[in-house]
Amino acid sequence: MTEQQGFPLPSQIADVPGAENWRSMYQYFTRFQPDDDKRFWFYNSMHFPEPIPAFDSVTSEIPYQAIGANTARLFVFPTTLGIEHRIVNGRVYITANPVLDPAEIGRRAEVFGPRAGYYFEHWDSLYEGWKERLRGLIAEIEGIQVPQLPEWEDDDVVFESRGVAQNHYLVENFNKCLALYSKMWHHHTEMLMLGYGAYVVFFQFCQQAFPEISDQTVARMVAGIDVIMYRPDDELKALARLAVELGVDDLFVEGAVAADVLAALETRGEAGARWLDEFAKARDPWFHVSSGDGFYHHHLSWNDDLTVPFTALPGYVAAVKAGGIAPRPTKQLMAERERIATGYRELLPTDDEKAAFDQMLGLCRLVFPFVEDHKFYCEHWFTTRFFQKIKEFGALLARVGVLTEADDVFHLHHTEIDQALSDLSLAWAAGSPPLGAGHFQPIIAERKRMIKVLKDWSPPAALGPVPEALNDPAVRMLWGITQERIESWLNPDPDEVVGVAASSGVVEGIARVLHDVAEIGSLREGEILVVPVTAPSWAPVFAKIQAAVSDIGGSMSHAAIVAREYGMPAVVGCGDATKRIRTGDRVRVDGDRGTVRVL
Image 1 (cartoon, rainbow, N blue to C red):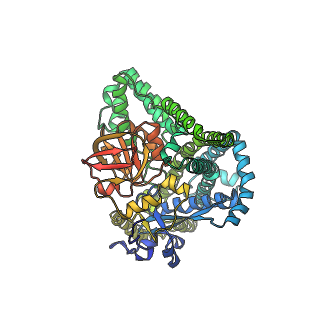
Image 2 (image 1 turned 120 degrees about the horizontal axis):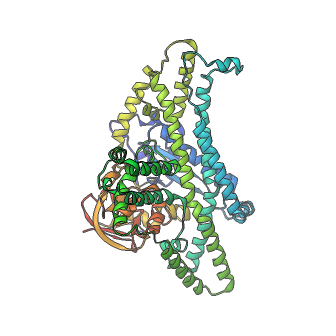
Image 3 (image 1 turned 30 degrees about the vertical axis):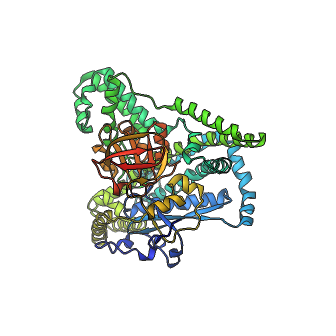
């Protein structure tokens, strides 16, 4: 690498003026420690593209507990432990803890082999059981009751001699929500890390056997997957076809507001009623899909905010009227993956190497649909219900005057919500008002103000010393963090934005830079989407755009997978595309070279 200054050390990051008290929002163990200056950290803008409200920090705290437990303790991955995270100025930075000692790698491999082998050998049946467990957790979170604390308990509590008043369940049921969220994340990583592990082994084999092979070429050998994450988009396409069939398609025009369209359908007689009926059927469960990636309470599901589906519907309706919605190019991708795999297989010199190649590729194709499917059950369906349930506790606290509005609950850490509910339990039992308003409302007002201030901070792509070697394949595939990428962040090309070539093709068009999922309604037909990161739930808007560009992501990130499955160019892992490109710029996206040029 060329000589360079390196990234700022964690200890050198100054507090953002006006938000000096940001630490009060988070647990003590999320702060950088003095020894952290010796380690390399990168900003996880894939999952946390915005400053985190206090409650939402649970979406880093709990997942990293589950990921580490799964890789380090449950399956005992040979070369990696868990991921550590720190928060600075409201942003999440992470680092992976590798295992480097060959003897320790060997010791761990002896445990890992039989455990991983059992899952791989029984993958299909275990996956069916996994889905049942997730549906069970979803039913549990949906069934949790938020006590409403009436003046007197119902007669049944006495005459059935239940012996427990409602206020007991305030804290118990709130903590049950957190416990279920933790269980969900343990199941989330149960098969996911093995899925990534299978791909990592195949990826490393290809790197050694074919030194010139690109990350994208390896990824294309497992492309052409049909996964449940595309089902919400398919439901929208079916609704678009139905609108044309019923003659209500004139209501679906660019810029139309969902509430206005739904109100107009109420006046369209039997045709409108039938469309609304099918719309209602599609909503549960397929609209329990977050407009983000399930890590922020305000990244609402389609059911909570219909902007994303109603941004996509006009384009689909127009396509139906013009002759039909073009299908995803799954068949072409499957034919292409066979052509690529056959070509590389023939380059292998021995039958043993060819057999190994076949086995590893077959395993990747077996496990890989899960890598996308799990997201619908976990980050979307379950997490939507989780945030909705927490908001119900917020509505209760607002009704009794502790909070100003229900959403204020998300500006309290979960330990503080526990305190507020305990206060309410005591007050209801004693027949007096709770004391939380005077304590929490000033705290919430300050935190809301700080979150606004922190949004304007521009976090460095990485912190700490540049590592001598960075060869973690999972970090490379998901986040696009490689030695070359680090160098491009430190020494950016003045003429081009450089990233990971995620999906092939070259297009030119007008850029639309979105910093927040709330801005997605401004996206127009034929634009090039430039974002910190995209979520799989944005798939419907991929029908409107020519190409996708993101600040973070590797060849197997969700943005890269979706772009390939929709057959459009994509460059991910650019680091600073959203800073260097502006809405209205004409840009050329080269998904083969991994570059974006402002023309």
